[in-house]
Image (tube, rainbow, N blue to C red; front, top):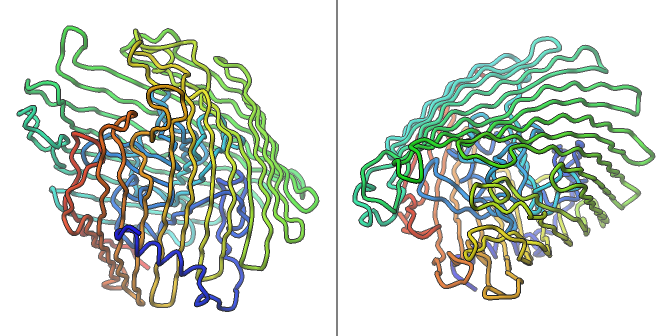
Length: 614
């Protein structure tokens, strides 16, 4: 057993050891939405889901979304040089353009690259995050081969309460935020502003190759969130939300020694309005319109083949009508959706928009000790025609705490606009990737302990791969993503501990040069473990994060060494309205690599003070 994973193995093994054979208590009443598009109690969820609440974010001082996500089961991260830089997120081995990202139910991301700029989404504006692993096309349509990540913006409730936070850390990092939220009568609202900046580090790990790249590459972000709702009466309610971030990111160019301030200026976010109506005692209808934006201006040294400024903008307009109908022992879902993706750019794409019209249905029920979930979806894409997907899951509630289940689901990914139409390099003949996923799970859940093991096998066909011979992308690939995830979370009166461990076999099964090679940047083993103490007005936590070796290229000739990181965090309620939060990442100042040529941060930390009247 590799030493850096020993503690994680022990934590997970404890979940199934006789020492935890205490009296079972009722399942947690936490509500999960993303796994079925309908509210479910956590104990009834059949999908492989992680929920991250606002309390967890506040208590342990996580400063950016990608770092927080990288600590979750099944998630691996590759960063190109520090805060605000391009990040690649892998979920169960699926890459960023094989994951759907939603903000309050609205699809968010770039239609040119297919991925979402999560590095620009500020944590301070987020109420909760739900991560659904495994193909979710039957729920959310194209691109959900690896799963879905849904971000929920801040919500107001209770007495109107202001909050102000100021933080300072290494690399001259400054983080500030102010918010006010609450409810009055039948209305509730939340308003937040946040600003952060950092000097950063040099994005290149070997700046000697380009002497003008020895400078630090900073990052700056200003964000606004707004949400509100009003309940007309017990049957009718309407509301809306907005999350918007403006950012400026500086980076390096390894291919030139000429001095230039390489940077991109971005605008990212989503807005939505909705109305929820109880038509009858068994029928609830929700009508929602949303729009999301991924807009960036990129500045580079002008040359004979590129201008100084290039622009890439994606706008996604989405309208949906969902109906939840109580039916027998369960709930029926029927919905219609229409999504328009439109791009504009300084590059001249042959096609700059597409529309996807969808119909979907689902049924979830509890039949005695058996939980059932079925979903079907049909998408009519203006570029690729109709694509159908489905999923089925079944679980047996062995005891009030133990659950055994299995599921099968299909997914697909539509080629993005760069792969199809980028001038000189696009291939308009591409067809969607497809996936078929089978998984089985065993879970235990009580008031204090959650533990589980999930095994999965996801087979991808028509995999889109870049062809260096033609400088285009082709449907020449097949791959298998299979693995096992173990997770544990124990919350005691004073002590808490937990973690996750992932074994992943992400293999290229395409006949040819790279047959049976590991897909680039996917580690076979990864894990995270924590142990903490908490009192009435303080918390302290130690974290261990491990990543096994990976390959930097499809041919598996460039090996990236594995690494382990140690983090510590603490919070203290200094007075009734005042609290302190401190966090130190990479406490041992580990030198490690996530992508060849790009730097990673050494020891770094942030100290924050928050005022929030009780």
